[in-house]
Amino acid sequence: MTARGYAATGDRARATAAIHDAEARLARSRPADEPEWIRTSGFTETSLASQAGQALRDLGDLAGAEAQFRTSIATRDGEAFRRIHALTYANLAGVQCSRGRLAKAVAGWNLALDTLPGVTSGRARSAVVAIRHRLRGLGTRLPAYAQDLDRRAGLYLGAPA
Image (cartoon, rainbow, N blue to C red; front, side, top):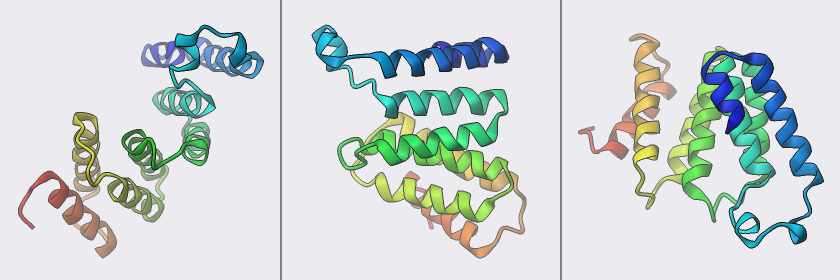
């Protein structure tokens, strides 16, 4: 979280240092020695990777952000944590879109939508709105697979088909 704050102000050195510090602290932690509230907070390698990915994305380190989001997805129980899993897929796809890899981005955004049925969340809804906004920002000549995603996102939001 500290890294995200530094990233929001554009302080790359402090944001990067905060990520490395958090990674080192997490690596040294011994859950049995932590207070109950820390053990049950759910902050894990998965959470750290998601937060680091967001900080790196905000700093413009898209390759680093993509790697962190991939780690977060690979280490999370997607069934138990569907909302944050979907949000992480959406974050990964947003980075891929920024890197010019539309097909991969669309695949990731579709995975996010696959994860959302039954999830009620303002953040999830905002992520789907952002998907549509990103797609619309690419112009009117979207490939059919991206148009299909836009329609699917619209259906999720309750827009007419």
